[in-house]
Length: 187
Image 1 (tube, rainbow, N blue to C red):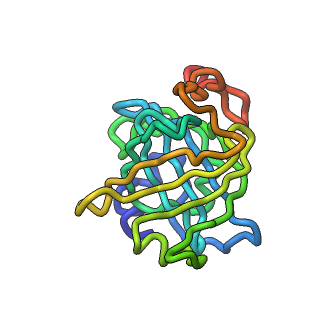
Image 2 (cartoon, one colour; image 1 turned 180 degrees about the horizontal axis):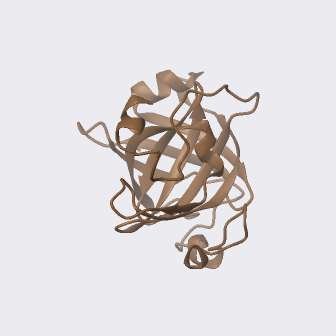
Image 3 (cartoon, rainbow, N blue to C red; image 1 turned 45 degrees about the vertical axis):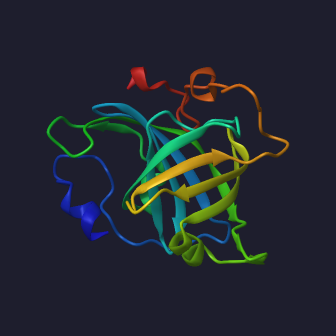
C-alpha cells in the first residue's frame, strides 16, 4: 500500500487510505469506470487483502478474438471496491469514478495441466479467472506481454457467455454504476 499512499493526499481526496484488509471467503473483483485524463476501466481482483489492479483503456470485451491492453498499476485497498466520486484536480488520477461492475471471481489458472495458485499464475504471467458480476460473467485471461512487467492483455475466454465474431460494446450498452445507478457524467 506504500505506493498507493504516496500518490495521494487524503486531506484532499475522498479515496480511502491504503491499508491491507482481510480477505473474503469468496474473493471479489470490481471494475471501475474512471474518467481521468483519458477514460479507462480499472479491473481489480482481490488477493492477500488488497486489490490487484490493471487499467484497461477500452474496457472489457465479450469477444474472445479481441485482446484488450491492460496496464498493471499499484495495488489498491479493499475499501476502494466501493469507491465512487470525483478525485479533485491536481490529485493523482483526477477525475470521476463509478463502480461499473462487481462480483466474485475464482482462479482457474493451470500450468502443465495442474491447478496453480494466484501467486504462481501472476509470476508465470498467465492468469485465468471466472467472474460472476452483475454485467460480466464467465472466463477471462490476463496474459503478460514481453519483458515489460506491467503490460498485459485481457482476453475473454470461449465459453457460454462469450459473444464471438463481434466486439460487443458492453461498456456502451451498460454505462451505469452497479452501486448508485449513475452514469459517470452524473457525478
